[in-house]
Length: 369
Ligand code: ATP
Image (tube, rainbow, N blue to C red; front, side):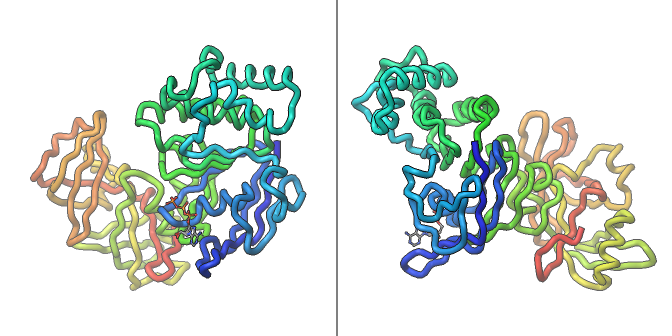
């Protein structure tokens, strides 16, 4: 398989629009890299430049140390799987999978062996004589994967490959892709809108916004240690709550005041705010819905960071429930155990786990702690 290097990659479309700005990423062999970000942030453009389907306007792209900027797509040893699988309707599953190899004039016996091998991996071996119209959505998606696998490429690129499948099939294919990654030991770059796909599949996630990389990290680090407000708000569902707060530092203790409340930050977080000179300044307090609780234990443990409010919305998820509320004119929510007695209209107390409070600079939107 392969390692990829993207250095200062840019894309300026002919109309002058800069879709990708100074993209830097080193992908190691066998990594599963996810590109996420809002619509139009440059995910597909970057993927298409790697595939050679889009010209690179600036910077250097190499595979295993070999510069690829001007290498033809067919010579890059990359296979791409698209969201609309693009199967040939008049061909059988076998022929669809064999097509690329036939074009390359691979000997017949070798084609047969490779297709059968891939079909086995993808559990398609009993369907090789069928035409695409006689397959389910998930089976078609697997044929599209199979077509990529038989080529044994150095790199797989996948552009929202599961977006046309229903929810149940997506979950099934997600674990199949994960297993496939391990079995093939492949280097994969995968574009998705779907948070769960990003969090469960990726070894590292690249978060993009307006053609800029916001952060590159493992899923757990992105969730726990977002580097800025954008990443904090983009990763996690329901999204992190944000509220403006005034920082006050007395001795080695920092407190944040907002609406009618004041929370005390733990020592390490207090120190960051003190060192940064935030006394008297407005900052943004971030707290994930999961880090707000209403159990007696939480209320006792986090006495210094408890807020009181009225429940304005109640959404049962099963074992958990989302309680919606307002602080001033800011809409917020908490995800708590569904055994909570709280119901719509109730006046409740919520404890913030102060260790889990994030604080952002209001101007730069960068994480302070
Ligand atoms: P989505 O999630 O909606 O697929 P994306 O992150 O994949 O979005 P891209 O398709 O890479 O976004 O597009 C990035 C930006 O470049 C968008 O603003 C888009 O409008 C613009 N763009 C794409 N193709 C062209 C083009 N041929 N000419 C000019 N601008 C383009």
